[in-house]
Length: 488
Figure (cartoon, rainbow, N blue to C red):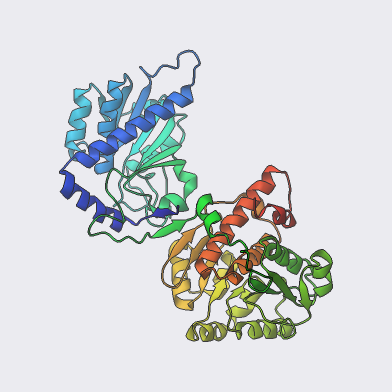
């Protein structure tokens, strides 16, 4: 039930193995057929039943480069000609266009022009569908001319935009963009999902994946390990721990929250609320806001310090804690305990000046989860460049020995062994004060239940994102609104 994305290298391995089984040309014909079917279905849906909505005569423009994606587009164009659509291929390099695909399109009476033809801008402006087959998986941004200019023209087209395999200008493995990118309404990808499609969804539109019989991850000679994972709602439900008949308050997960200060009384209330609403067996609170926490959450056992809080199975430390000597002492005390520890907010700022505390936990094999946003990440991992967020979070996890959750539109979770997750849920409404405090409590509760740290972080981000979506639909603003929506 997990969503799995694979690097270009693994896709290529599976593609070579499949071609050895099926022979040349079979995969391309399958890809072109899948592409044409999606175009017909999407265009039919877009046109609806209004007058003049029949497919024959509708205009399709193919943007065709020199690689296999261009071949897919050309053969799909020939198939669309068979449905009565008017198809024009715009070639960036006629001498290097896919020969068989070009021959098929010409036999189907498709039109062919070059990228420097003065009619191209008008063709794109008047098209019903624009299909992007400019570059393939081997290309890296930025796009070169004339592909870059064609993409700029396509951006202004009112047509249905369809990308072959991935939008041109998007890095397939990282989602990084540099320069113009084809903005697709739908991307038809082949073999398996590529990480870039999950990381840069704003360019990809709806993603339709067709295996083409390649068996990525399972075919002989390929690795079964995906390069990027994401949870579905079904997978999240399967991971979410529920109490059993034999459980009591001590066996159902006991999480401690060390948070808050005189200056920030709300953060511990929000973080504790995130933990309570995930339903652990018990939540303990340690800090300066014990009265405020218990007033809102009377089921919480509260103390004024970590030393007096009692035993826990996981700690959350940092939200609203401040960065003074008292806060530093609290962080150090928590990190010295042999239980999973999540460090957030002010705890991360303090940890940036005491990396040796993190190193000691790594040496002892203790589980640590760090949950920074971009600025906090830079404080702790100042030598890592966030231009490529996927690479940065993986390096941070590998060098620190911690599971690192990097917050953002597409929150990333990386484990020290390289396992990496991307969260696909959420809404801009979550970009509000206190939202991260709730998330820390949610993940802390899951850690206390015994889930592996990377799965706890990925699941917490998924549930937090869904809660934000539900709160938005209900018109409920503010981080505290997330509490009631965390379990659906």
